[in-house]
Length: 134
Image 1: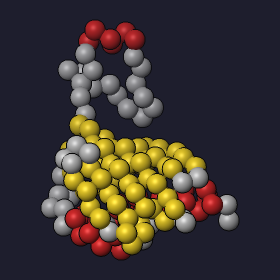
Image 2: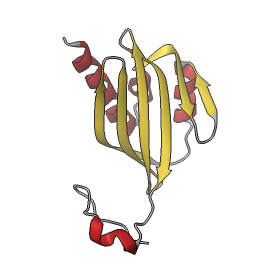
Image 3: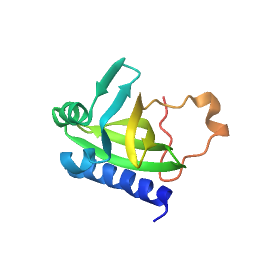
Image 4: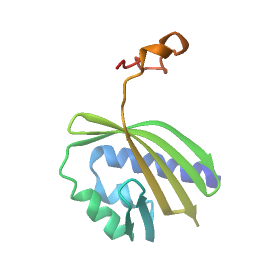
């Protein structure tokens, strides 16, 4: 199987397992010594077991919607919406692979915001979305 197809399939399974709440399958993608960085908080989690433990202990009800996966070779990006207790948070996850395993992930989180009226005439809604106004 083509390496890019194999990695893309693994990423898709990662997000599907995240949605199902299947902690073991969710973290099978990570190398044993993988690193997960959250730049906004400055946190780094080292090792598959630590990454799994911090996600498995999350107190919120979580749901995952993948908007797009793009990449090739050893660098992939997932754009997702993670809904925590009913509140959507937009995320971008950069994933670096070596030997078919995820070795370094950097995940960025952003809250939704309303679009200002001054640019309403210039914008169109993204597919499947409506424009939120301020």
